[in-house]
Image (cartoon, rainbow, N blue to C red):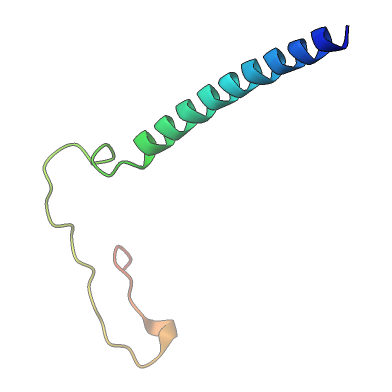
Length: 69
């Protein structure tokens, strides 16, 4: 009887380890796919974005920002 309980426990641990390893492998594969720099490129042509206007100011309250008047 004791041997049967140990045998079942070993089988349950093996199945749990296999399922856990499978879940871990799929999670690592999806994480690698998510972080792949080749997969996360913006579609369309790459142009230089508009550069912001640089203004030297004496007082921070009088600073001009891009897109404001």
